[in-house]
Image (cartoon, rainbow, N blue to C red; front, side, top):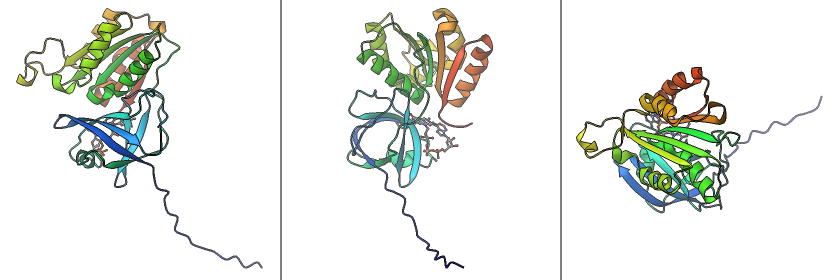
Length: 250
Ligand SMILES: Cc1cc2nc3c(=O)[nH]c(=O)nc-3n(C[C@H](O)[C@H](O)[C@H](O)COP(=O)(O)OP(=O)(O)OC[C@H]3O[C@@H](n4cnc5c(N)ncnc54)[C@H](O)[C@@H]3O)c2cc1C
């Protein structure tokens, strides 16, 4: 009989790479845009993918707003007051660090086999679409059309509306942008003259008015799971190809 010596070892989890907060813009009490710089060099990803960030061992997924050509990773975050990670993120100041998993993940990518991209987003759900459009324009590409509906309760939460409006004016043949607010009667939205209503209630109307060819179109929905479920129920039975990225479970 052989004498087998059993050894018990405590395996230490390998340290995750760190990313430094280099810029922070507070949009409202519960929304901020941060820029982070991974300390171990450039972070490779495709537009539409997400990274996994953490603090004190709590990790969550964040879609990347910036495009791969940009130096810093830009993230648009909503505070969940009782959440595990976002309250810790709200304490961060420039120079603080977060952990970042070394690899980007996700299959919510631009489907380049089709030429019409009907994109629906609620608040932070705009992130993957900004990344896709920035990279597309940076590469001076042509031949694709983007129709983006971005919804929020309040106009000041839309955040990327100025950039997207400007890009749609500069590229009217390839970008159509519709920002919408769901609480138009509230004082915080006074002066709002754009579209009104939740994304899920106006999506079909805009899909019909833009009227992209169904066989050459993909419908993308990102953000609030309720919006995604409702839009999916409307468009999938009509034959539209549909992809989604839900940020949380309801
Ligand atoms: C692929 C993917 C990409 C994501 N990208 C982003 C992003 O770009 N920006 C971003 O802010 N978040 C994004 N999220 C959500 C993010 O991962 C966290 O869940 C969120 O930041 C809350 O983290 P937390 O630890 O503070 O709360 P948690 O402890 O994770 O959540 C507490 C509770 O709040 C719910 N919840 C989570 N997020 C919200 C929300 N926004 N509104 C209401 N309830 C919520 C959870 O389901 C849970 O019940 C993404 C999620 C996924 C899966």
